[in-house]
Length: 96
Image (cartoon, rainbow, N blue to C red; front, side, top):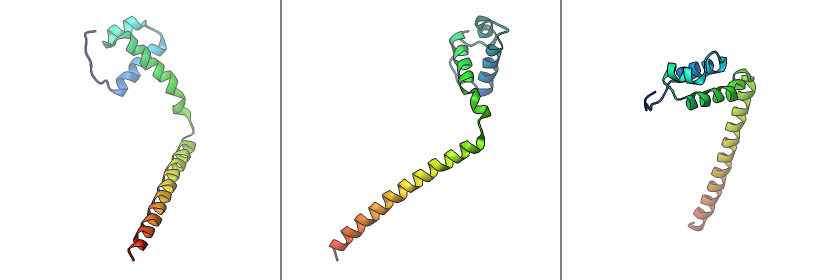
């Protein structure tokens, strides 16, 4: 467990977190096996537990909410452009 610092692959993190979740070995044993600090293993395990429900969410609802957010952004942009256009028309009318 030397002071290695680096970016770990998501698959590696998942493997370690699942091993910790199984509870067949202690954090110290897993830390030695995977050469990762026990605190990091606990953090990955917690992330797994916090986000596991996302796996089973209805993807159709998620797509709809993403589409609604995109639509809202487009409407905001249209509104800003309309305001800019009106402002430019007023300014241009001053020079005629």
